[in-house]
Amino acid sequence: MSGYVYGYARVSTQHQELNRQLDLLEKQNCNEILMEKMTGTKASRPELNRLKDKLRPGDTVVVESFSRLGRSTKDLIDLVTYFEKHDVKLVSLKENFDTTTPQGRLMMTVFQAFSQFERDLIVERTKEGLKSARARGRKGGRPRVNPRDIERAVKLYESQIYSVKEITELTGISKPTLYRYLKSSHK
Image (cartoon, rainbow, N blue to C red):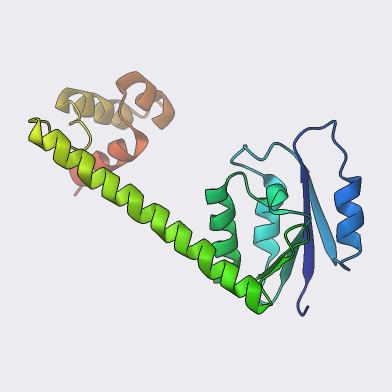
C-alpha cells in the first residue's frame, strides 16, 4: 500500500470496547487510527469527518468491517464512492474487500451501479407521484409562501432587532426563502 494508511474503528456505545478492532488494525501497519464511540445511525461522526479531511490521493483506509464504516447500505455506498472519487483505497478486513485488487474494483463498480439504480428509482417514483397527483387535480411542488409572511419577515430583518433564527421562528419562513426574498428586494 502506497500513501498514508489510516485505520478507522467505531463502536456503537461508550460501554463497548475498541480493542478487537484496534488489534486487527494495528496488524495492518496503519500510520494512524481514528476511533469513535458513537452509534452509526448518527449522521455526524466527527472522527470519520476528520478522517475524510486528512485523506489525500493514494492513501488507504482500513476498517475491520463495513458495519463499522457505514450507517446503512446507502451510506456505505456513498462512502465507498467518496473514497473512489478521491483516489483513496479502501480495505475491509472482514469482507476481504480491497479496492486495489481486481475483485475490489469489480465490487466498487457493483456498489456504484446500485447507488445509481437507487437514485434512478427515486426519480422515477417522484415523477409517478407527481403525475398521479396532477391526475387528481393537485399540483406538485412546495406550497406557496404567504406574501404577508414574507413582507413581515423582511421588515423584521431590516429592523436589525431580530436574528435570522428568531425571524424564521416568528414567521415560519425558512432561512433560504428569507435570503432569496432579501436578495431580490435589494436589487
